[in-house]
Image (cartoon, rainbow, N blue to C red; front, top):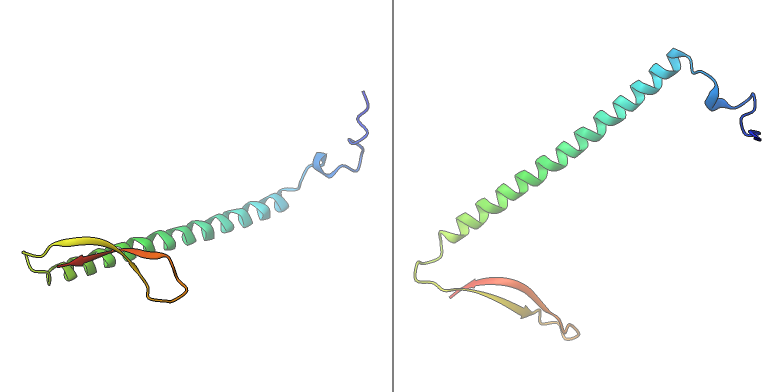
Length: 93
């Protein structure tokens, strides 16, 4: 069996001193903490955004009369070269 790749200068077989391991572990822990904080900030932002959108929709719906009919429509934007319909938008009639 030829194990030529396992020669004496292979770094992955040499033991790593404790101070180096401790430094690596601390760097990984700091990196992990930054990542978790970033994910939490993004999650919090999305929750706040969803709440504000819900609040805006609720406030807008207070202005609609009870007898109104809500319709979902797709519209053309009015640009000459645009053939697509945009939407869907909700209208109260």
